[in-house]
Amino acid sequence: MIKPVLKMGDPCLLQPARRVDQFGTPELEALLQDMQDTMAALNGAGLAAPQIGVSLQVVIFGVEHSPRYPDAESVPFTVLINPVLTPLTEQMEEDWEGCLSIPGMRGLVPRYTRLRYQGVDAAGASIDRTVTGFHARVVQHECDHLNGILYPMRINDLRKFGYTDTLFPGQTIADD
Image (tube, rainbow, N blue to C red; front, side):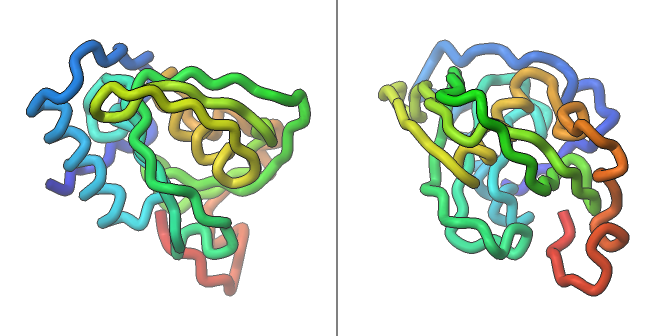
């Protein structure tokens, strides 16, 4: 079921999420289906459970082709629960990000260029991946939601944060 996405300013988005302790439950399956339906309906690259009002450490992400990120490389669809991120370099790169919880806006956000993420999938099986590029950016963005962090909190220069149609006039970038 498509759920409403909470918007910046909602206190639920600023709270650390709780770990998931039980797997294979009807409640977890329903949450994951709601998240997938919502992300697909909004052409998102990812979605965190807190964005739909559920304070659990659950993120989903995946991109084959997104009108919101037309130049991004593909990222395999992933369900990641109780994630742990480990930067594998100190090198960071700034790039433009948007968020379903901050519609119509973009910001230039620094992210680690290479990282390892670990966690479990919906069945509780281990996930352990090393990623770079857009994949690394998406994972960091979604996992920030689990710690009550929205991307504007990471922006170094607020002159590089604004409305998409003002920052990129004349460009067709799908609305968040």
